[in-house]
Amino acid sequence: SGGGDGPEANLCALHEVATKALWRPESTRILVWFGDAHGHDPRDDITETAATSALLDNSIVVQALDLNSLDYSGQATRITEATGGTLYADVNVDNIVEEINTAIVDVFQTYTKVKLVSNPPLGIGVVTTPDKYSGEYSRESEENFSFE
Image (cartoon, rainbow, N blue to C red; front, side, top):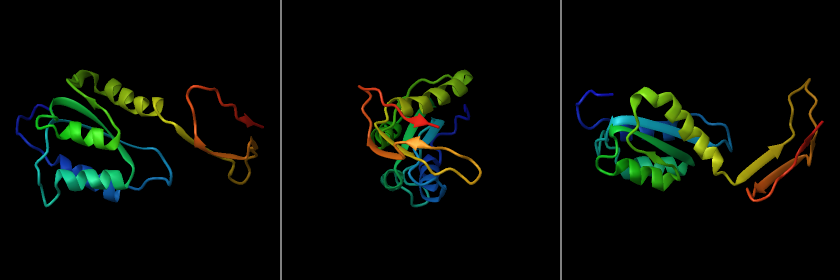
């Protein structure tokens, strides 16, 4: 932070994570993007549109922390809005750890889908009732799952 050297290779990095990172199937995919400058568009043939499409294709929520000019051209706003994430403006680098934690926790405060499957590894006995649940979860009501 604070290099003062203008646009960065943000879009390439976002595209790289979206297309090459390994994720557990059906996991909640959160990418916390922070920086002090917006990205070159294009850079190495990666455009904002290509990066955003790759993020969407892989169900990745982008939480962006703007330390100075990350959203200078509106890139961070467009990408976070497209992926269902949030742009955190005017982030103080001295609080970066707390801000990253907040960005991650905020994603889980708004989820509506849950999946619960009882499939313990050998040697561990876990029984769930019901044995599996997948579907919409309303935050308006309490759901109880029993573990034995």
